[in-house]
Image (cartoon, rainbow, N blue to C red; front, side, top):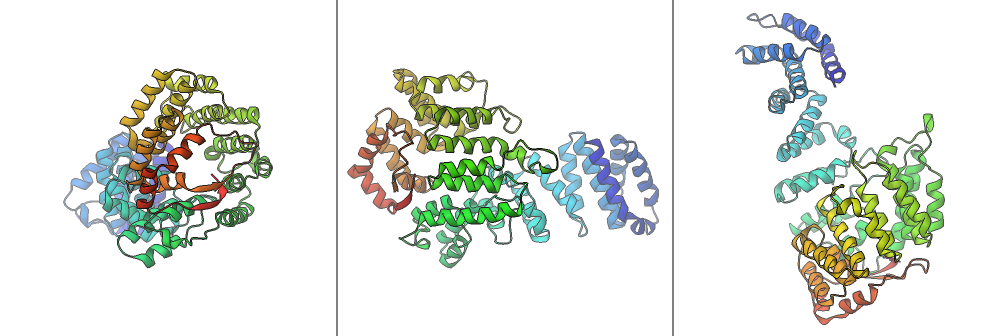
Length: 491
């Protein structure tokens, strides 16, 4: 951190020569900058902050050359952050970015500090400035930050719309190959449709090619008319796969686009081709041929491989792949995502006892998950317990899910189906269909799909689901919600 802090200071100092010569008469700004430079070389943040504090408090500081002000504010903000004084760091960086000549690095620093301080309205405002003035830089942002930010602001309709307008824009093209913001574009197109801008909504939908997002749009009553009734889901997957192959050919050191190809092949029930695609990009290579996105993609490479094995009925190999993925840390924490996926596989293949064993670290509180992740845990734990004859444990899991319904509505329905609670499952489905935020997922669940390959184990809950789906009250709720679709791919 020290090296990065003072490297930043030295980089800014490159452009100070001309500005320093024209220092105000009442203070020798050049001498001040020399003192700061000396302290910077010694990594002496205490001295730097003392100098910056004195200069900023001087009434003549505002008449100093703008580049000198920017430099002092910037290095002061950096030192304040290093000393964990985030309030001071934010004050200095905001003062710096109010100056017309403030460079991009300071705006990026401001965005970082505001996110650390969880000042989400300010984060959105800063992102808007970066998108307007440095769009190519915004393209370089790690897209994994967007879902986190969106979760913080989703409840605020104004902030939500402003953020979506930025990331849904045609000018925003993530630099990370194989990544997508189509989900955000769907959200923004729905807002436009609700506002009566049907042409804008249709134009936004036209930018979307992610197959899963298109399926969601096709049943969203706000956007349904933008997708033809004879929508060919299989062709959409094939088009997306062709584009991912083009991206993969242009980015030979990236895992993500090829893994997307494998995911599309799985959607098309082509498990052997998916495995061959994944084996062609084994992530264990290093040196000059190492993958640029290995840190982000390694566990998901294993996850996708496990899905392909599972679809082909190769259970033991799927278990091994999930276990390999589980061994990879997730955001520097134990990998709960792959652990839960492994437990779900075990449950799907009729091994509820193994699923319970797999989930013991979560049950014991040794691994933490997101609110949604905890709902997945209680679904698997409850269903596995029920199939093991532990009804009390299953009821406890269902009770938890009912009290956290908004964190995973579909998961509660799944547990109720597993437990044979048809009335409860019907009630939760109807509740979802009548809720604008949950409606799309419910309609997708209730839509019709082609049969899965015979290598996939039959879902023991399917008979219960079909009974619920056929109920008059559920059919009425489906009609109120806008109706389902028939898709020519498997679920």
